[in-house]
Length: 140
Image 1 (cartoon, rainbow, N blue to C red):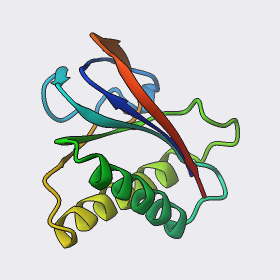
Image 2 (cartoon, rainbow, N blue to C red):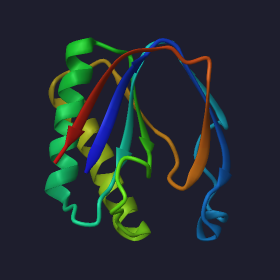
Image 3 (cartoon, rainbow, N blue to C red):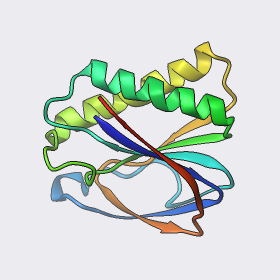
Image 4 (cartoon, helix red, strand yellow):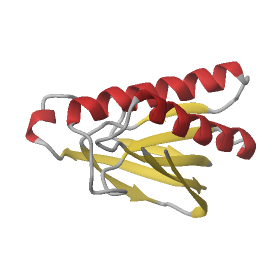
């Protein structure tokens, strides 16, 4: 699993169309436009070799960074462009859910004040009003 974590202030995202015909019937949760004043934006790629331990490890690393930065929001964006050897869709969905659940558990255990926002899998997203302050790369 790979994650590119960006500290953004601000970040605006518009959720566009599905990228895969199989996903056209899944309505993304929440509004189509999302705005964050200050966040850690994690672009996450699931690799073919990944297991739950990879998702957990990267989530713990990203969670520790969010804790250190004391950002109010941690935004997780499934992102297929950090590697060429991608997992299939069912595996990706399973491991992304595991990744997000680990982040939420990490936040609860550490009394974190940040909220986890998961953007939908398989949808194009467009950045608006974005300023990247810092960047980190994680892999496992």
